[in-house]
Length: 476
Image 1 (tube, rainbow, N blue to C red):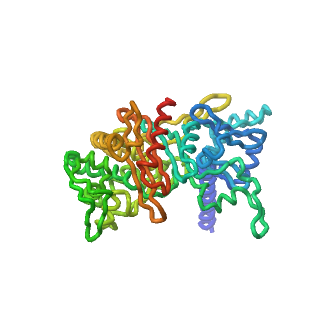
Image 2: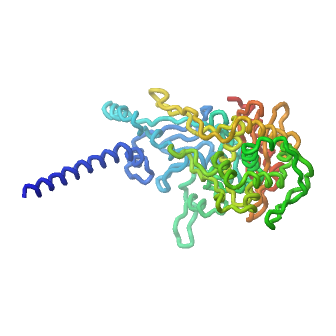
Image 3: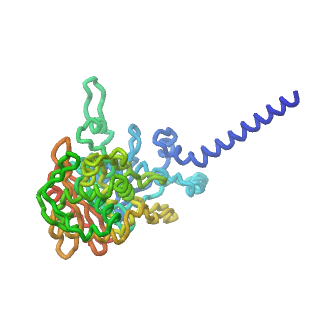
């Protein structure tokens, strides 16, 4: 009998210990996440008692603020997908969701101040958030896109600060809850309901969630793989006859380019040269090179996500036959990327092979105590060696100086770039441009994609040129 009572006591004691650990885990580790979860009803009650903090761009321009109990978005549709919105009915998205606990003053550092506010009867004020976005550049990007579907990304390759995440078409976050008619069944529809039904997908942040074939911009990765495998590739002469036959598959080129060196091959975007280089590198090393540039990864893995991000996709090496490898090497086949991803590829070349972790948060400011948190730039990946990055950079300068990217050229500024015209099974080709400047000491990377736009050099490059001009004119 005593043995049974002892066992029962141990069982009860063990249960209490496990319950204690569980409660501690929920409070310490899951507590902050659950507290700011959009589906937590207590959050709405708490928020009604707090003056939500303001979101500023890097120059102090207001991106989101509370006025008269309403959340206001001064930039409207120009920054809707990235800044996001708050709705009692539809929750919160974008930066409003990512920085919720800061804006509501719900961090560990805020707990003492919350108690003091209650004791002193002071109104509760959330923290302000300063982001790396530049409102003026964001608006310019949207103006340049106009009514065309597409995206523009700009970032600083030296530290990973994101300056622009523009996506078109967009929507007005200030009217998301407004009534907009009735359905056939008599249900009252809101603006958000109509946006969900819109075939243009205005709610989608194309800059980070788009899934596009990269076309010839992907030749930067193929070039990196070839040069890493065999540095002598930079000195070779290639013969382009206008097409290439791989196991019965005919890969066509834009022209018969004849004898071209490495720089000239990239400048004229020679498909046959880079298809051959992809085949020489082989599926395994080609795949490893793409991963080294972060193709299948998410730069926010292990950190709170600031934006919704769709990692790129590429056929696994064991499933990639030679025709697929040749097609993938020129950015076709089954390769899909998002524009921010291609900005990180260009950033690797611009920053001597190192990709800095992209970020939007600059700092969190307490209205009373000053800076609570500041982002420290950190490397994410080392894609290639400085020597390989230097060779590719030189070839990208040739693309703009004498090749397909001439429309991106600027007087007195050396621009490095790569165009792309990605074949699209659902319509006309997508127009791409990726580049950076000044090539000697790059301080900005710009990526432009215009869906069904046609030739990247004619359509996307001029948009990139104006963005680069504006960034370099604006200064730090």
